Length: 278
Image 1 (tube, rainbow, N blue to C red):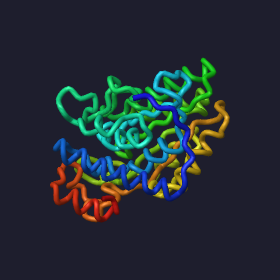
Image 2: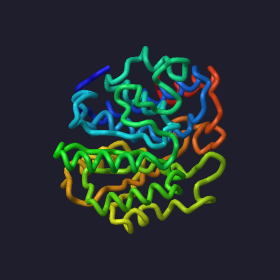
Image 3: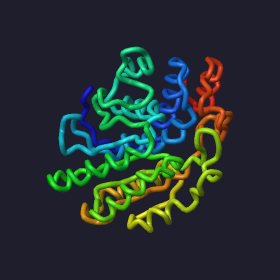
Image 4: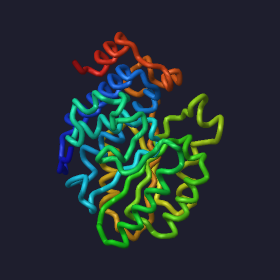
């Protein structure tokens, strides 16, 4: 489904979007019996702000549209929920998530209109984003490219090869957002490689870097808006968004069991009460 939108919404509407997107994610995962719920919930606020007040997408065919790549593709339900909230998908379509022959696969697929690249094989999204960003600069499109990666994904060497390429080519139209929820599949990220230094690491690669609360919708909206106001020939931007895995539902928050666990009908009902969504 195509949609043209450039939304200006109130703080209350933004909060409502985020709550609705969270319950949509939980419902999708419950009905499909799939995994990675907590990883999707940690980036709901990021994707909500991107789609509701940052991205300019006149249509999915417009070559000058802003681009979003969800490199941590296992969080696909959060992407689909955000796309549905602005009319890029219908409620009927997101109800097909994870079903046979559905374009709404467990990882994003470009067979689905509005998805820029297949993702989920970690470390690939930022290199693809670099390619799109430099192509857009050459063609003078004036658009922006946003890539959402996980903190564990930043262990991949391809991320840092792309980071070098982006700063060397002054891709000021490129922004990477790190969903730094502190967990990888089976253990805390800091047990594998420290993530507290992510901002400094990106800065050392020539990026303008920020460290923010990844669940503060107004802060996200402000810093992402500032990204769009920058010169396309300046340095690329990294936003390290500090998040909580399973955010929004008390019994899921920071509990890595929900990386693979599927919610029951009772779990969904309790989540609706906590989120204030009927």
